[in-house]
Amino acid sequence: MKELKAALFDLDGVVFDTEGQYTVFWGEQCRLYHPEHPGLEHEIKGQTLDQIYDGWFSGELEPQRAIITERLNAFERQMTFTFIDGFEALIADLHRHGVKTAVVTSSNRPKMEAVYERQPTFKQLFNAILTSEDFAESKPSPDCYLRAAQRFGAQPEECIVFEDSFNGLRSGRAAGMFVVGLATTNSEESIRPLSDYQTKDYRNMNFETLNNLWQAI
Image 1: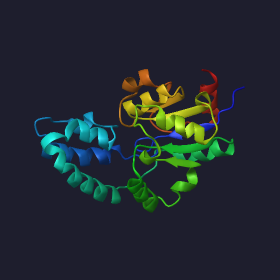
Image 2: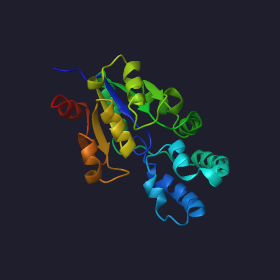
Image 3: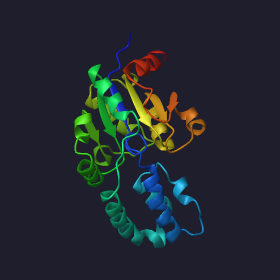
Image 4: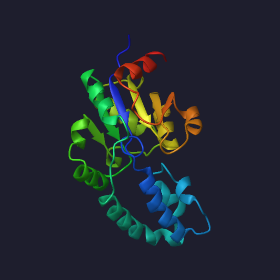
């Protein structure tokens, strides 16, 4: 049998149930700067900050980026970081079976400092934490997941990716990895073409169920 070596997790909407909070923040910014485009906060879900800025805050709005970043940093410092149901139990079971775990996120280190402050045991759950400073290209490029696999000496086909956003799902697929789609940001139907398995949370998931799904491909 093949050996599953690594489980690689995005952060928001995958480890933490934070997407609703970000929708509130970006809803306020989008209504302020783009009142002509209602619902924009839903369209930009899953994008990195640079992608949001490049797409919607260029030209005459570019000077507003620093202001928005300051607001975002303040917002993240008071956010609630609640684990997706069943996540901690899954991580513990993966470790019991020798599977390495990593966070692979487009979030930056200042954001992660807020996470560490709110969840002091967070670092202990993972063998590695890769942030936007650790890779050259943002999702949907596979660069971040390939670098995570290299960190563990694993081949892409020996890894499972957990993602919720369209760009993240595409990144895992482009890396040649088995992709579990979390229907926390988008519907199961919409993420099905970009993932090998879909779920709303981790309550019915453990090493055995994951390994059986992965072995079947």
